[in-house]
View 1 (cartoon, rainbow, N blue to C red):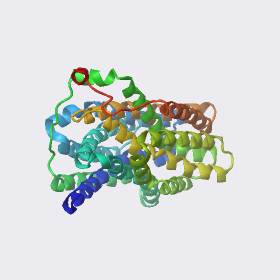
View 2: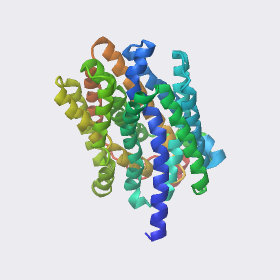
View 3: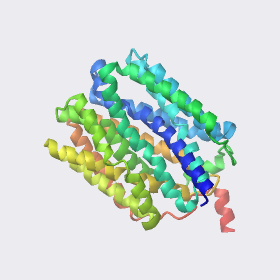
View 4: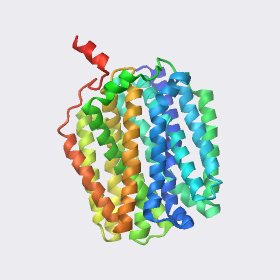
Length: 402
């Protein structure tokens, strides 16, 4: 690659990763805030866990509709819309005064944030050569790992000097400013942005391998975002840490995982993305089970650190596999169908389930159940083959056969 191409590649990736970082932090910031919000609104664990189900429900609807929006305003403007709208919702949530207001705001947050990912992934696929795709995805995946660290750190800082509502207001203002900056410096969106049609959607949804890759993404999202979402409550309620101690441990635990996506992307390009996906799920499931079984704080800390190191390794290879399974022009559609279903399950339903189990038994038991499910999916992943262009619309499949 020439020097100018390399500069454009890393500049574009860094810009997208920065916006993804803000998009992700806006959603996970409620995890370290959860013990405080639970106390203020007098909620049980199940009601607290449902907050992430509301965000996931909005995210689900938004990603499903993102293709129709990007076909009208292009991918650059869709990313801009998502960033500014997410910032506005955070500003509105800063004036939250009731549980009903909070729930509506969280659902709207998911709606605004969900528009980013399909357009972001398509932008990366057009920016990065196919032979470097896993590494390109790995750079992009640094964003949520920084977000995992930033959310508890920001919470700890904010609560020292102001209320959590004021913290959301400042984060919202920063996101709006970042969206304006992106509009000014990003290259114009190029390439086709056709709206999804029924035959394309039907062709993808009819493929069994689409549902398998969606299942694996759901389990991976649960092992990463779902466990993270409920971890502060687990540390506070099951192990008697203070909110500040839980936030700090949450941040420290993600530092070790920060560069794991880069290593996983490098290994995926060399050893095969399918193998990295399977082993990432396997280790994440094992560490989740051991986290739920741990009774003493030193062991809890050990598995709080090890679990995300394995979990985040799934995504560079996972997105590379998903991108390769669909032909050019259908990549955004495949992401907009796969990710919302996976996020609704792994980032919404399973955290709510963990919270419900926590009310009847303990959140640790919820982690044990979840880790067992992740392990089951990991075993299945080793027996599935993901060929290039395995997910096709009916018309394309007929054409290829001809």
